[in-house]
Image 1 (cartoon, rainbow, N blue to C red):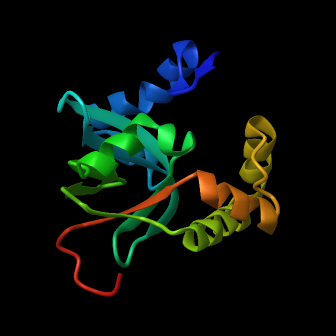
Image 2 (cartoon, rainbow, N blue to C red):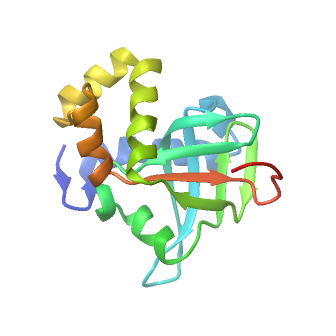
Length: 162
């Protein structure tokens, strides 16, 4: 299962793309709030693209969902949304057209990763082992926060504190 400089390829890519089919059939709610379906525009082609990402934080009160770019600023979806904002986000039964988006700063990202480790300690250990990421220490999370951008999406019509 090769991973190229731009992300997974081959069988791994196929497995990671399988949830897209659920969202296309309006069955993404089966994945709960653990995954986010993102529609974005290709930065060079303008063609609509779609991907499913793991939700690192979900705040039901504000509708905020946060994801982390596992391939850093080389992820195609991340490069695309920094050029042209997201077109659509779906998580659970929530559906946002043209959501507000913001890239978290390094401190926020390190705190986000710490919360992920607290909520999912077993998964965090597996992820750290599989990727080599120094996810399990505060220093390691600070290092990751410098290289793995996190993006917050909220519904455009949400009124309240950011």
